[in-house]
View 1: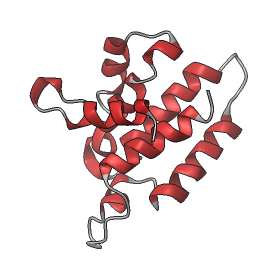
View 2: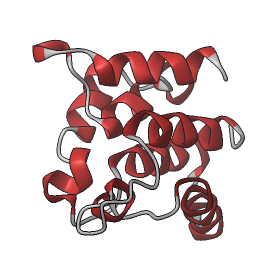
View 3: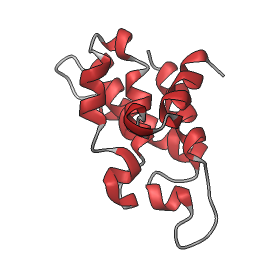
View 4: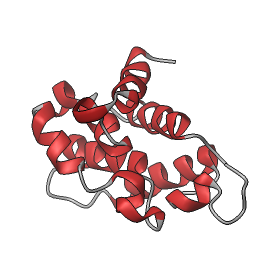
Length: 129
């Protein structure tokens, strides 16, 4: 495990106003590499936690990883192949990409904890930068 993974989990675990959602935690640990302030990344990721606030959509950790991928790799040409690869690898590691499926809502079977989703998203992002 990398220190960046540990930092992302620590950000996500904070309480109150210092809390970061899964998307924010993943994106913010790459602030320096992408050349965007942590504050800006935190604002951009605010609506993506908890499957865009509904648990019905894509895991926030994966959204954060995709944001960083775009900031790092986009140069005017599509990055859909890299984005698709990141998506597939995240799904393989976490068991799904939709928040409620990962959390076992309706099935009672948690496929991956939020902390592990964050760690996996950071790890997959680190492999691409």
